[in-house]
Length: 130
Image 1 (cartoon, one colour):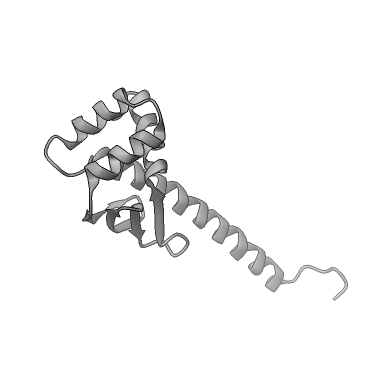
Image 2 (spheres, rainbow, N blue to C red; image 1 turned 90 degrees about the vertical axis):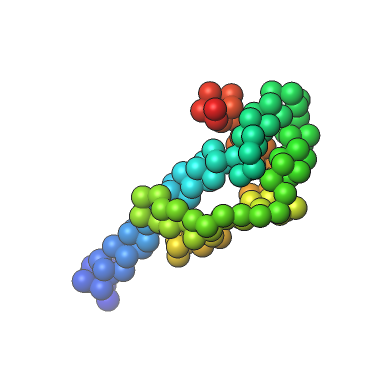
């Protein structure tokens, strides 16, 4: 065709935009899920307080990451819902924390222990953790 816009072009452009918007919305919701998982602590009695103290007494995120890995151990929990997405479950092991969601764009989100250390330190610094 000679540069004319057809109904098919408009529908295709609309679908691309809505996919981008949905992917961005899912990404934002997954960030909320990550915060919610981290705010729960390790799941062990006194774990959240131990994590808080570890943040206050470690100088590097690498050192904190090692302590978090030990505190969490191996385990996980069933999920919860945030906005329009379900966190099916989350689990942790020597590699970090893995969150499995119902997002078709980001079905699995993996955080290394260093990522977790940075995020927990930020939550503590902002005064949001305890």
